[in-house]
Each structure stands twice: as C-alpha cells, then as structure tokens.
Image (tube, rainbow, N blue to C red; front, side, top):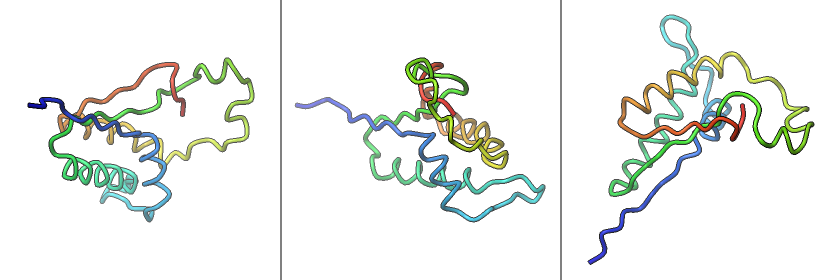
Length: 113
C-alpha cells in the first residue's frame, strides 16, 4: 500500500506576471484592476481540480533584495518597475489563496519583485 501524497508547488509570482500580461485590463466596479487576480485564481483552481489528491502550496517572491543582488549587483538592473496596476493585485491574490485554504510561502531574501 502506497500512502504517499503528491506535492504541487505553484510559482505564484510567475502566475502573477503571466496573468497580468495575458488578460485584458479588467476592472472592478470601483475601478480597481482585477485581471491578474482573475487569471491567477483561475489557474490555481484548474490545478486544484487536476491534482485533487495532491498537496498544493503557492510560493511568491518576497518583496525587496535577494541573495541574487548580493551575488550580482546588476541583477534586474535593466528591468522596468512593476506597474502599479499589477502591484495593487498582489495582496488580494494572496488573501484569496489563504481563504482557499492553501499554504502560501513567501521567503525573505528569495525571489524578489
């Protein structure tokens, strides 16, 4: 008898950018951007359905500098600043993930947005 459970790790930061750039500029009735929220949550719900017997954990990059900055001072030096329309959607996405009962992992010093 095999009692092991599969583990699915979701790169939430990757999903965030993917959804933001793939979907149109959706807005709530109050004018708040919601496209990334809709996209990320839809992708997570699809994985939950596809891997219903698995433990699912969502991982997001922590805000700020990372070990990569220490290794290479020019890390992300030429990258554009995150758009405000995207930044405003991060906290609601993370709140929804928690409300869905999924573990959310954010490790300071890893990732970096």
